[in-house]
Image (cartoon, rainbow, N blue to C red; front, side, top):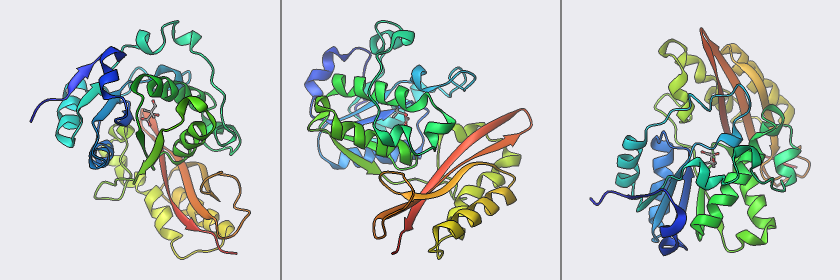
Length: 282
Ligand code: PAF
């Protein structure tokens, strides 16, 4: 198998314009690889970016220790079907410096729901800025984002729908991939010590516990109880409209159960995210 080519500058990307794009921050796991395989299934050339984006990390967050594994990532991305890995240096993404990154208009779904936007107020400005910049450089026809970061997926969809620069880019979701114990895969799971791993199961257990619940308030109370029983610090465990992420006001629209909880352990802590469908009935 021919190893994916690695581009550090956008110059040679023009030959791949119109391809299928999978943006990542590296430390690739089966969740990312499933997105690359999905990209492959569309038939065009597949471009995977690997860039740990400093602007989406807040002060005191894990930018410096975020897992980086370029050599392994290149092997894995190649096997999954990537033709090109775009791994730009920070100066290529932010030529005027990280502190001078241009600000981008954010859609309401990035600022109003009180979910990730509340806990990480810098996050979507950073994500939208870098994804917009990568879209301009890669110029894909399709870009794929995982459903695990549900709010991020809705934010990118809204950004693309409202910004003429991104006209013609189709956003496709990739389903959550889970480890055998049910925990949603994430690069940050590497931080969880073995002895605390069973507590990480609390998120999927909370989603399983509301499978037959139809009342949003009951579902939220049940999820919180299951998370607390796993000694997790609940940031939010809510039922929302799946697209606007506002309160589920209209029946018969898709709903979503969305959770973020912190798992604290001796010497550290990790934020875990998960979500699943929640049918809203009138
Ligand atoms: O989901 C991620 O890995 C990142 O937020 C993304 C979309 C690659 C932007 O840095």
